[in-house]
Structures are given as structure tokens and as C-alpha cells.
Amino acid sequence: MLKQSIYGLTVSELQTWFEEHGEKKFRAKQVWDWLYVKRVRKFEEMSNLSKNTINLLEENFDTSPLNQVVVQESADGTIKYLFELSDKNMIETVLMRHEYGLSVCVTTQVGCNIGCTFCASGLLKKQRDLTAGEIVAQIMQVQFFLDERELDERVSHIVVMGIGEPFDNYDNLMTFLHIVNDKNGLGIGARHITVSTSGLIPKIREFADSGLQVNLAISLHAPNNEVRTSIMRINRSNPVEKLMEAVDEYLEKTNRRITFEYIMLSHVNDRPEHAHQLADLLSDKRKLTYVNLIPYNPVSEHDQYSRSTKEDIMAFYDILKKRGVNCVARKEQGTDIDAACGQLRSKQIKKREEK
Image 1: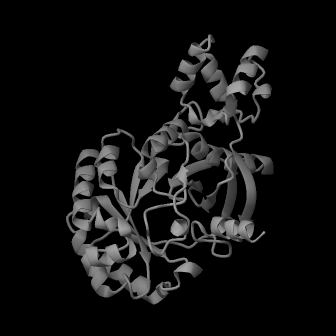
Image 2: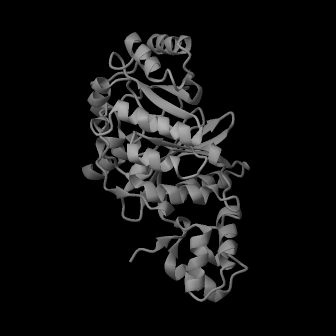
Image 3: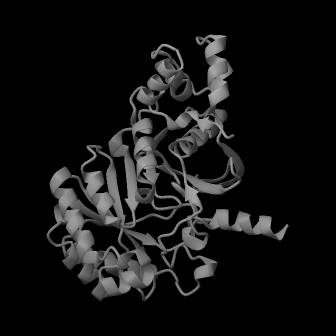
């Protein structure tokens, strides 16, 4: 039977586990310190634990739920990792370098069922949810990679925007957020963490009530139901007007800004009328919303789409700015490697099938 990942337990859960196994609860904070501050990879290296305690941990927990299969490094410093899980499924994780620090984009599911017709992540349907431990382990694997280079670099930001829909794996997502945010461990500030959703309305409302100061991003990609339904199947059950009602409730409860992600698809959603419709949609929310215009990374399996020209992107941007909408045209990263989320995984699976 596969062991549980030690990275999937909060401090309080680990304290409870130790007490249930006849150990003192303070052992949990000792283990936590070894895992996240000293960052050891084996229980036997935890020198202030007794041999019996170490044996107990080894019998019940795993410290290496991910196996590094491929690493691709871009000229701009972006690094994409392909990890194999214990069941031989594969996931992607990305490290991005910014002026404000190092950000890691994590995956929450094996495959995706949301059905965005432009996205490489959905080429392979959802197999299962990742456990909280498998999500945390992505951060740890990247940090180990940095530690081995001895550059004294630390993961400072997290974006939950990899393969899968985070809110479709809500409980494991929330456990992950509590673990990486814990000040006694990795201590990554809530305001340095962003969760992206394609728009699961009930979960947006639940997230608003969670009390976490984590940032929220919504993959909007179109300003009206006709266009959004044509490129995002989820819009059938979560239409734009209902989504905006949930956004209004979120803003009222949290007073926290929402980012709207908008992938620019040539002659699909990038026309001037789309920019004006988007400005209309956000007209009463301008102080607490922000639009991120994203150049499309072409996917060979979705050849019906192409990238908007720089001129069209800037024309769209100018309309939004003139209409008072906070927005940015995102700088591209990792364009010389498998840039689109899911591409590297898809290629590796094809290689396996050809053998």
C-alpha cells in the first residue's frame, strides 16, 4: 500500500497523528522544522528524534512522492519540470523569475475536465485529483532544485494555475494553502499566493468565506456568453452574468482585488467591440479588478486558434485603459521551451505510447 505524503499534513493534523500513536504532540513542530526550514529529505536525518519515532514516521509516511522526469530551462530563467507521481501519472510545475521574486506555478489535478478548447491542459482528461501532499511537494521539489545550486534563492510566490481546475479539488487546495502559508514552515505570505479558477461559482462564494487573504484570479477570456461558451465549456453551467454576481459577492465580503485572465485569440475575442464589452462588464468594479492580457501560446492540437498580433493586443489594451480599466499586457516567459501549460506532459505521454 502506498504511504501518505508527509507534506499533506498541517501542523495540527501532525500533532493529532503523533498523539494517536503514543507520541508527544511537540514532535510535530520538530518534524515541521526539519521538513520546511532545514529542508531535509529523509526522516533519518532528523537528529533530535528518537530511533523509534523515526521508524514510526518511515513506516507511515513518504517524503518523496514526486520523481523528476524532465527539466527544461529557458533563456529567460523560466524552468519547467515534469514530475512523475507514485502511480506513474505525470504533472507539470513551472518556476518563473520576476523582479519581485521567484514564483512557482503548481498543478492541482492529473488532467482537466473543464473543456477549454484552446488549452493544452485539457488534451488529456482528468484522471484524478492531486493530494495536498502532492501539491506541496511541487514547491518542495523546486526549492530542493534551488538549494542544490547553492544560490541562496527561495520560492517567494505561488500561483495555482497549472494543470487542472483548483476549485474542483477544493479541500486539498485549502490544505495546501494552509501548509505553505504557515509562518513556522515555508512562510509564504497569503498575499504572495494567487489561486486561479475558470469560474466555479459555488466555490468562489465558499472561497470568499474562507478568511484567507489569498489572491483570486478568474479565467474569463471573453466578455459575453456567446464567445465564452464557444471557447470554454464551463460557461454553459456558469454563465458570465451569474459569474459576475459571485464576483460582486466576493468583492463585497473581502474587499480584495480580483484579477481577470484574458488570453488573446486572434479574431475570436480580441476585436475592439470585445474590449468595449469587457469594459462595460467591469464598469462598476474598476477599483477592485485588474485585467491580465495574455499572449496565446499556440497548441498544435488546437490549430483553429492563433495568437493575436502585438498591434491588436495593444489596441485592446488602449481601449481598456481609456475606459478606466486597470490592465496589463503580460510579458511572455519560457517561449523557447514548451510554454503552454500541459504541452510538456502531453509530449512525454506520446513518447511513452510510441515505445
